[in-house]
Length: 154
Image 1 (spheres, rainbow, N blue to C red):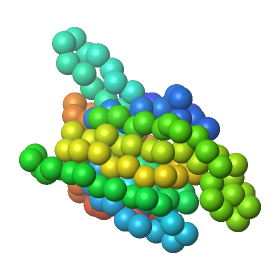
Image 2 (cartoon, rainbow, N blue to C red):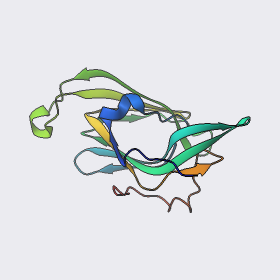
Image 3 (cartoon, rainbow, N blue to C red):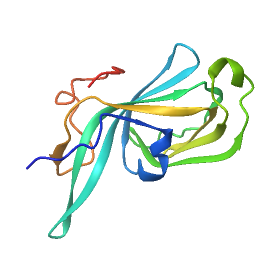
Image 4 (cartoon, one colour):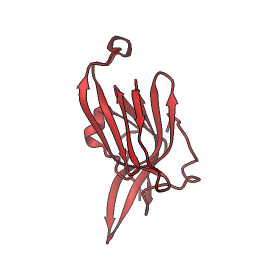
């Protein structure tokens, strides 16, 4: 079986067609130029096989741009950090719109099962780092996904 990957770079333009429910976060980093980077496994499709789901999943780097007012409110009562939902609201003009060449920024909340991560950002890019794998779980094994990475290339 093979999954037809529509594209290897996604962005805030695709937000309405994307969903991060049950996507594990392996690592968080703060990059250059006010970036927030997340190393995640992104679930492209949930497939019902009999009474169980299987998942087309790829390792991805999710990069939020022009980030500030970052707040983490996490209660790590379980192992790992898993996304429940990503919310984008309150569009407004960025403080540095002329410099970043963007007209809108949003309040973002990454709701995880361990608590929220909130910030302001002008948008995101999500880089798919490998072909989707058909799995019986939502997460790719750390060894199989090549460890922790913030690579921006597939």
